[in-house]
Image (cartoon, rainbow, N blue to C red; front, top):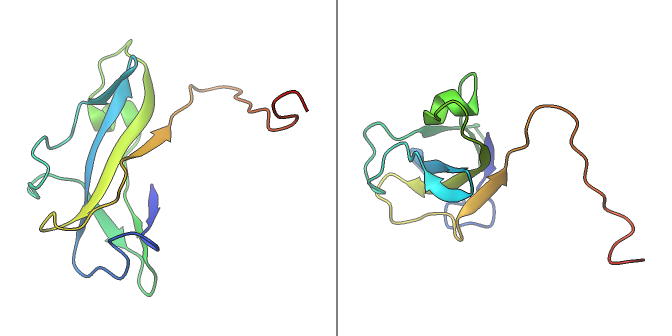
Length: 116
């Protein structure tokens, strides 16, 4: 996962950035949060800075279900995310929700819009 801090409270941040993150499971947002205490750094996923940029990366491992400890059979439709600094005094606003699509062919119709 790549995060560009440009235009956020975290632009030009120094130090480690952390992810307060969970998933939307079966339509319920903010499930399976990795570290439930928002300001706790111990065990919270860390973004790695790409030198010379405002860009950071977070590796989720081999699968979203494994990373978030999702029970087999549950359906994950979003990653829920707030990126914050180590002291939790600066963060992304509003919360970020990243759509997750099931394996296979997925399409989005962008034109025509609204009957055009």
